Length: 257
Image 1: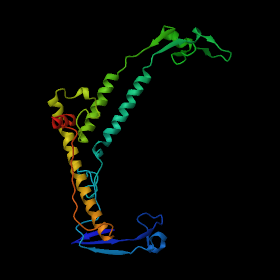
Image 2: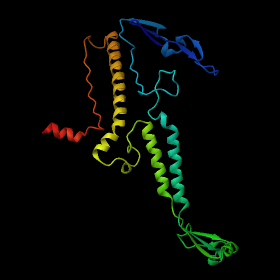
Image 3: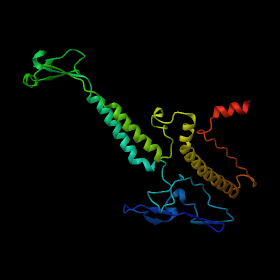
Image 4: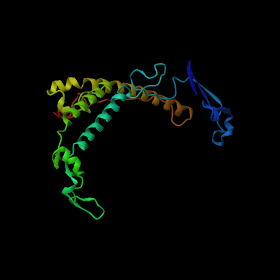
């Protein structure tokens, strides 16, 4: 356990033995584990500027557990939509499989094998669907072609709309995972449409920069305590390229000119 308060950093080490009843288990001495026998149960460090670790969390509200300081995944608001997109894709595959061309034929149109089965044309077994003579006679035709019109356009439009909702809930621009040909056309429309992704990436970059800053500060403190490096000031430098609104190739050409 780590506790930082008023410049004093306290580290507590504890061991627990799991008894199968749930929870952390039963407390046991550190010497119960050979590799932990040399650890102190509690160490206090003074003059520490902050927690000796860096913590990164996705910069959005934790709607799953509002009381938790932990973050949520970037796709936490789209879990159900992702499931719906997967189901919609299965419908598309079923539409293609169920709409495959077939020929319904009466069994008396084929030669019979020795075991009483119809001898279908070699390599075309999937194409023919054999029925009893009475069934085809009831239909009024002994040979029918099964070739239904596929509804793939409607199904793909439904899938694309689900993908656009996923993009919106995850803070992405339309066309990131959905069909980009069905979104903004002009350059200004594309740039305006990508502002959502730009804002999301910028917030993630700021959160990551804060986590890295805390991590480097912790490394500096640990290095000083263990005398792994001479004391002194250090400098951090961050340069984030959004890679979304800014065209990297255009920027390089401008710098070269």
